[in-house]
Image 1 (tube, rainbow, N blue to C red):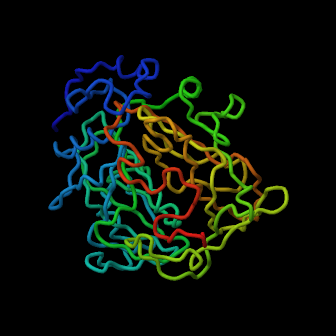
Image 2: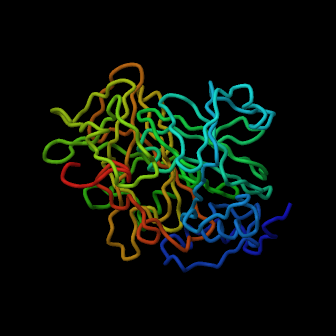
Length: 413
């Protein structure tokens, strides 16, 4: 296997970027790092320029297709659907077999995703081969997550790899195909070949940022904001990540978000700004005391009370919250790229996070500023050359609305 290189930039230089101040330099600043500079001793998430190099070097392939530049995000790569979908009777992990071999025992039907695509029904699992393939060096691993627009439609996805015991985790040095399990939960959806529903991050070594490092960084350049000001030390709550709470005060009409309608129509995920929100969503309003009772097994879109700013030297992920806090699930789409809620002039005071929420088993009361999710942070190998936001035409920078890009915006929403 071709390796990235021998590591000309030492691990000590890269591992101390927090204290050296790389995180707040202009995007083009900092040492120039190439694939040949990477080794097991250079921890961090690969930025867009190194992902592009990995594509050019054949570590990320696409068979007969090419990987377009638009697929490469500041700290992740969009993964595209292949030409067919397998309707399967149950989910599974391949363990010591290939996915292609294991799935043969569970196939119910095969759908053609070319041309007009196919309809995926709610609460049925589908397995779709992805166009992209991997040939990773032994010290590079990967992690997958749904794209934000996928999570906001309550479409559950997770990546499966050959000989794997875990979803969404791609082991170091993996060579082979990628498969995507897709389960629409609230709406029947139409999907087509080349549509991207999820994203991949590549990383080297232990790239996590500790709570102490995160607090020190927040004091130097704020990461969390409340009401347009930097969060105080008491408001900056951490425990292996940074907690976010809910905004259940909403606007002057107490609107705080949306709940998915039962038995809504078909939604084509290739169509942007095409749908009237009222056809798919009910407005959720808080009751006295700034609280909402969640109906069990119903899908809600809400907003965080805090705004988050991800500087160029960091990447973040929304992670599952401790289930002992209640019968509540948040987090269906998790990646926050460098530049989320950030601008080079320092004028943007973060962006609020859209929270996908579902209660299980019994009705569940949530209250304003209740902590329901957590952001974990990882250092970048080096700053990306493009940031989330204007650099890539992002849909959710500075958002005050939870609905995804498929819905029309205007007074009605």
